[in-house]
Length: 190
Image (cartoon, rainbow, N blue to C red):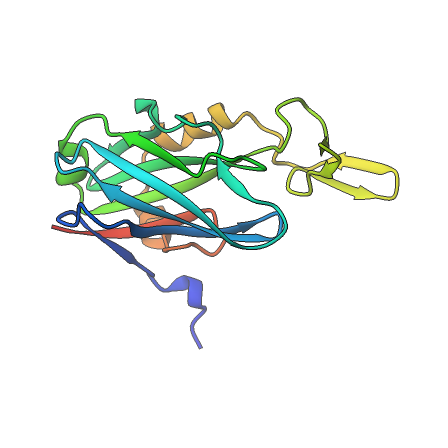
């Protein structure tokens, strides 16, 4: 039997649907399952995003109210539009807007590749935020608290994602709501 993640799994987004929000991404962090939906503007210059928390103890939201308005969060790589999405636990920002670099970004692409970047609960390097332990960025055993390998600059990680071309091998392994729940691949319906 073939491994389910070796198959190319695709979602889809309809460019002509500018009224309804369409499913784009789902994941689980801090034990909370959540999804992100997107609505394309009529002029195709922006993408409005909404985050919905479905079940779990910690609400997630976008890292900042306007985190995606920075044009460095999207880039065309061949026929794929790459989008970086920043989320954070305990955030109350449930909506944001991604301004595309130019209108042709989404119109000339065949696929949208989303990668999620998780911010720590606390902007200061601390395993606690309001007495909530940041289990996504730290391990603990009793009084021993150890940072895990996620303690890297989100800005640097996004820059690497946006500016590193996708190789043919990587393109062939992309999956909608990927095996690591960090990526999503959407076929664009024109």
